[in-house]
Image (cartoon, rainbow, N blue to C red; front, side, top):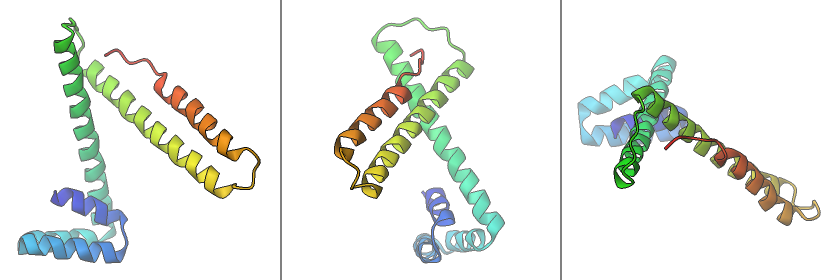
Length: 142
């Protein structure tokens, strides 16, 4: 949890960093001092961001691997996939979901930026559907 706070504060404003440091100090003065020294330097912020991204990726891959195992057991599928195949499949799914989220944000932003364009209300869902079809048409062996 502290790692998540540090990663969030590393990309946030000074006000966010101050709040994170205060929260960490309320948990433990030693943790608060560590958070303060980490967030005050540029190198510390970069390190916290990298560790946060790696932790997020690792957690997401564990979730996808767990889902893969559960579906294999439920449907009695015999799979001889190596751990590298499972990690590759998990990364594909992770990046596909990221692309879908970005497509949703872009479609909403275009609607907000160009409200005067004729038929934008109809074009926005169509563009979003096309982007989501592209995102989820990747083949992953599950």
